[in-house]
Length: 186
Length: 156
Image (tube, each protein chain N blue to C red):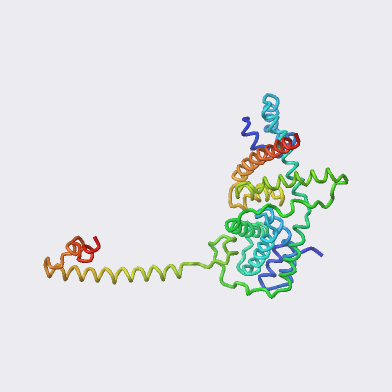
C-alpha cells in the first residue's frame, strides 16, 4: 500500500485525525529537532521548538491550504520559532557536534574528524541568521536552491547570494581555525 | 566570465565544472586556465562542499533521541483544540500557523473610539472658544498659557 503523502495526512489531521498526526510527528520530529539544534545550538531548546512546531501544525491544520508543499510550510514555522528562540537566548554551542554512526576504526583519526565537524558547525552557527538558514536548508536538509528560496520567501538568485556570502565566511573562518590549529601544534 | 560570476555559478551548478551547461563550462574553463586565483577558489570551494555534505550526513543520537521524546510526548498528551475559524485567504500560510486572526474588527473599534473621542473633544473646544469669543478678552487663552501662576513663581 502507498504511504500517505504529507498532504494526505494534513487533510486527515484537519478533520481531527490524531493517528494521522502521530504519523506526521514520526516523520517530521527528527528533522525539526536536527534543524533547530543546529540553528539554536541547544538540544533542549531544539526539542521545545520541534514540539511547538508540531503542535502549531495540529492547531492550524483545519485552516491550512495546500498552496505549497507541507514541508515548505513546516520549515517556515520551525525557522520562525528558531529565530524567536535565538532572540531570547544566545547561541550555546552545539551539545554534540557529531556522534558518527560509523566511527573511524582509528581512534585518533576519529577524534580529528570530530574536531573538524565541530569547527564546521561552530562556523555555521556564527553566520548571520539568513545565511545560516540557507546553508542548513541546502546542505543539511538537501533542498534545491529553488525550494530554499520558497521557504525563505525570496528569489533563487537571493538564495544564491546568501550562499555565496555564507561560503565566503565559512572559507575564511575555517581557514583561520586551521591556521590556529597549526600554530598550536607548532 | 569574472571570478565573481564564477563564484555564483559554483553555487548554482556545483563544484564539478564538467557538469555545467556547455557555454558556461567553456567560459569557466577559460577563466580557470588564465586565473590562478579562480583555480584556488575552485579548490577551496570543492573542499568546503565536501565537508558540508560530510557533516550533513552525520546521524547523531543528539537528534534522534529528543525527536523520539517529542513524538512520544505528542502521542501521549491530550492534544489542544484545533483552530476552526474560517481561513483568512490573504494571509500567508506561515502566518496562519501562528494562529493569527484578522485584526480589522479590533482596529475598526479602536478607530471608532478615537474618532468619537476626537469629536467630543473638538466640540467641547469649539464650544469653549465660541463662548470665549463671545465673552471677549477675559478668556484669552494665551494669557492663561504664558503668564506664570503663583505655583510656578514659588518653584522658581
